[in-house]
Each structure stands twice: as structure tokens, then as C-alpha cells.
Image (tube, rainbow, N blue to C red; front, side, top):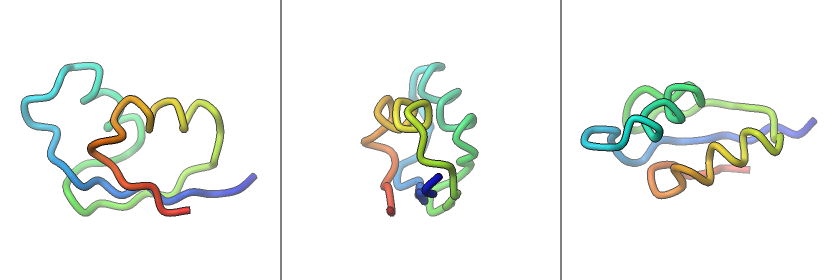
Length: 58
């Protein structure tokens, strides 16, 4: 499977509990943090929920 890199570009302060859980499930902790994940439909769905807080590097 292909890998994608996800970078957090906005803070999770003052966000809904669902958005905070999605960010933690993606493994993101603070602004500038980058994680590498498998490119699956589940991960893409999680990214879609918080797309304004992350940047996808393919």
C-alpha cells in the first residue's frame, strides 16, 4: 500500500470532541508534527473530517 504523510497545521484548541479524537487517532499532537500512514479509505475519511487542520503530503 502507498503511504501518505500528514502534517498538522492548526491547533486542536477549541475544537469539537470528535475532531480532537480524529487528530489523536491520526497520531498528531502539535502544530508542525508529521506522521506517515497507510493510504486507506479509513485514513482518508479521518483526514476529510479535519482537512482544514492538516496538510497531506503524498
